[in-house]
Image (cartoon, rainbow, N blue to C red; front, top):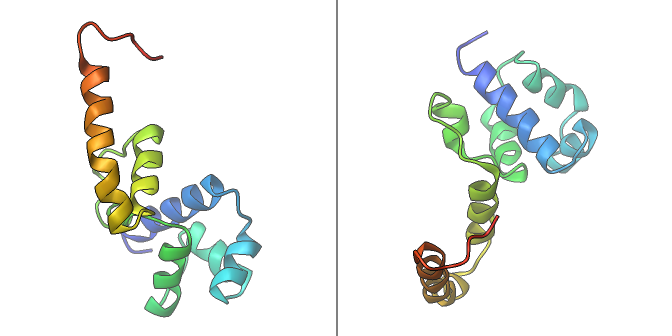
Length: 116
């Protein structure tokens, strides 16, 4: 299979498991047969854009995972924070900026209490 089939299959499987979805649930949500999802996760076949686009969106996969797999993946806390931010409206994000700056300043203060 082509070089991209492994990063795609791995990313789909990781994202599906992270969202606690079955292959059947993913297939149903993007209106394809469950074998299509199975084949993608097993690095078989060459999915069409009509399948790939909704699959990546439903599973909230960062395209960098597929196209730049050599880049180091971020930790789970950064991933969770990124997902929360990406789910914000522009107004919500603007309101969060000063709060986040304040929290970061407090956390980075040498006299601050450490959080574990």
